[in-house]
View 1 (cartoon, rainbow, N blue to C red):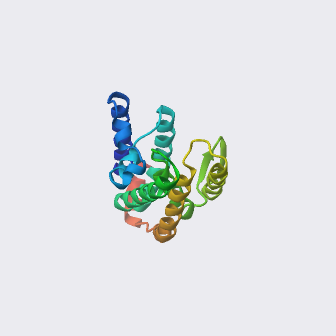
View 2 (view 1 turned 90 degrees about the vertical axis):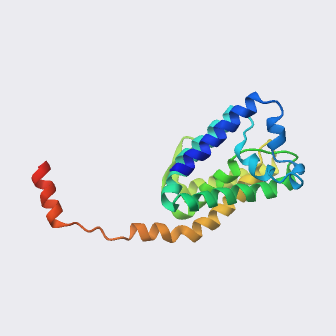
View 3 (view 1 turned 45 degrees about the vertical axis):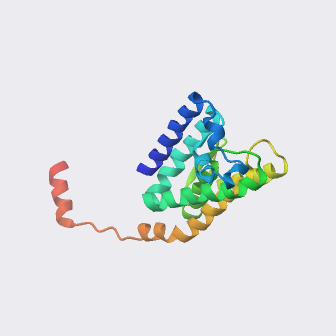
Length: 198
């Protein structure tokens, strides 16, 4: 869980810098300058356009990130998160004059959960649905957004989702191994528990 909370904390800290330091956002967001200022490919993943953008991304990271980090472990989770965010930015730089946000990385988390926990129930726009269906809804919205631009980097979402789907298909056996472990009940421990609490 430490990586999820650390990522949220870093986004919050940089958000404070964005609000208080003139020119901070412009120096770190993703733009064509990234080819000569390569840190922008990473730094843009931790910036946000406004408080609403920050709030919804952090809410998604909290709910989806905690589940996936639990399933993958912190190191694999961080690898997935970074790969999805970096992949999204490497594509975005060709299509958007400027972009910023954790959405590409978070869509990577969602994509991995689609593969690893397709039946997990989630709430999307007030409607409960399985993770698999939610993933298809998100993909549909972003494909529509590509052809009806709205100021959202929909391609970044789709690339992040694609990276997540690949990672999720690779790591899915981790879930099966955990769920298939036999539950062993030690009779002596069970009797001791009964004597103590019943």
